[in-house]
Image 1 (cartoon, rainbow, N blue to C red):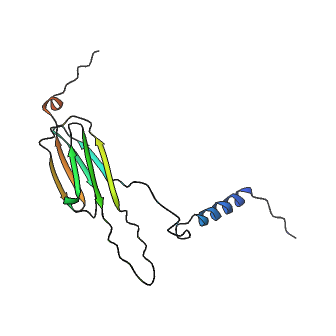
Image 2 (image 1 turned 135 degrees about the horizontal axis):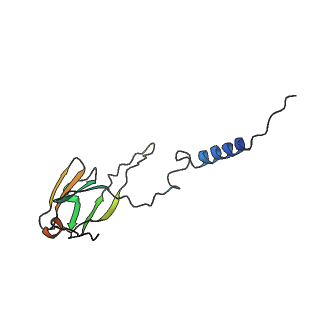
Image 3 (image 1 turned 180 degrees about the vertical axis):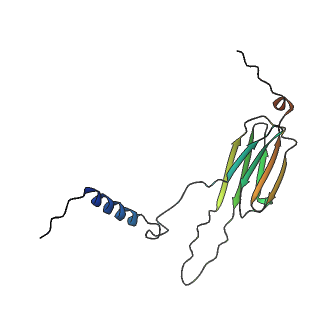
Length: 145
């Protein structure tokens, strides 16, 4: 008979493995696992001396389905992804695409001229050029020493 050293971490690893298998996405029927999180487009914001450049990732949508509104200090983007419903008599259909309405409000780090905004939507990327107001361009802050 051989002596085996007790390792408590081995039991914890076994428990973690069992829990991972229990909550594995392929193990749970899709009707029981609902993802109610609102999916919003990813954004990238870059500020230059003259303008603020905003890039939004909105794949699979047409420009006519987007609503973009710009104020002096924020950008509002909303839209709706419509699902293409296909039914099969034999088998099932699994979709990982997210459908439905979305909305995102992006506050801007400086005031802009919202009447001179230019937009370009190509390959699922919305590029907005938001020119700064003259007061923001020439803003100088005096530092007291």
